[in-house]
Length: 117
Length: 114
Image (tube, rainbow over all chains, first blue to last red; front, side):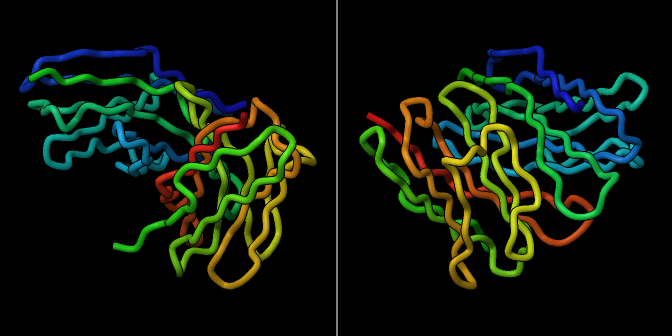
């Protein structure tokens, strides 16, 4: 069975600090996909990144970076120089990729990030 | 940028009543989904839909739930006889074909059962 664990329930940082959100996953599939979504206070879910299991290259997008390590089954998300607008709940999610077509996302419980000015 | 739209944003319904939540997926997407999020908890998969039929559903999606694509644009979730525990945020999502393309979510419908 697939499982996503986000051990950090809540994190509070002061603006301009760097912060890393942890995500550990479990799956028996050799092909799978990992995602991060942001849920700001307004409630919508905003797609941030998708990664497949064969691509372990780290990715950077502006102040955001992601570190994918298959050896530790982790897909961590770092925000550099955090800003108040980064305050949100961040969800890590997993979907299997062995079969064709669409497969459901399995979400972690989320990490609530509060960035204080 | 194209987006998934959901209506209404908030629905208040008496227990036992039927409710229909509506979604307009992104126009060229082929896969549609419903998820729910009970307040303060994680997002849970309900059902996925492709080629005018359900492709997968979770244990939550029991006989009280149904989905329909009544025309070329709308995708609806019906709860036949609502219960208090159905109170949650319901998200519709859609994705393009193949390779587990990212699912793009609507803003959600907050369903409150009294």
